[in-house]
Length: 335
Image (cartoon, rainbow, N blue to C red; front, top):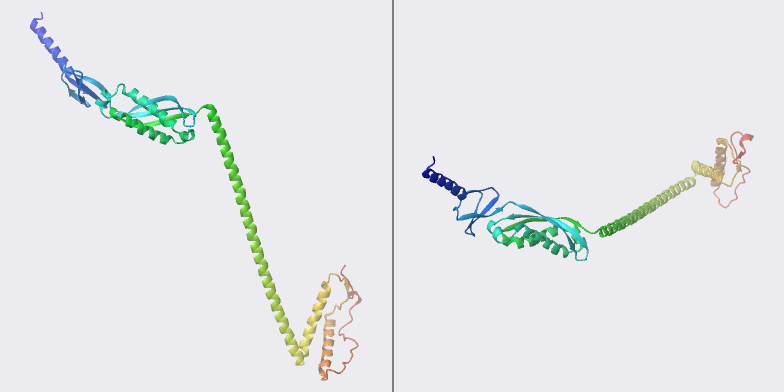
């Protein structure tokens, strides 16, 4: 049978267990606990094993010190150019001071959420629609600076604010699509016109270079032709001078060569004439040589006469050596 002493011992043991359980507190990693003594904040317990005064101290708030994410609900925003858009986002924050986060603001997460939504309307409402859609990084930076400064007295650090979606009205999206299409068509037209202009410029440059090269070619050809004619004239003059000197010296071979050359050239010109259709000429080469010999004899008779004023002896015919050309070779038809 249990005596009164045994009951007292059991009560004392149970009381001691209760006291130990009330005095020893284990704080998990990533959390801080605030300690209140008779309802007044005294200290903050860090992660690990801690001891408080039982029945006097108690745990006030269990604050999560890890970075936390808040979803910012969609809300309508009116831009500076009176366009209505719907925007949402997310906010990342971290509690830096557990006591201030617990006692400086009521419902910390709700306060940060409302603060973020209010500043989203303020920041985005000060921008035009085009600027709003193209400058998300600037919006995020401005929101971060404003919200972080406002939440700093609460012992909270706002690490990041990101705008997820910006949805313009459906009719505005259609108008933007038509505007984008018109802008692309405009750019395509400009690029096409620029390409045609560049092609015409290149074509004109090519024609210019071709004309320049052609003119240079004609100039070079004219220069070469003039040089050739000049050299031909010089050679002709030298040949004429040499023949004149030979004639003056009484050399009949030189005059025979000169007369034969002119004779052959005359026959060549006569044969190439476009108006002459039928002509007679000796076929045998001995006939031409005989004619040249006759012309040389005439010149010899002339140069033997010392008196230039005396009448020349008439020559009845040009002597021809060689056989008489056959009848079949006398006439040729060019037709």
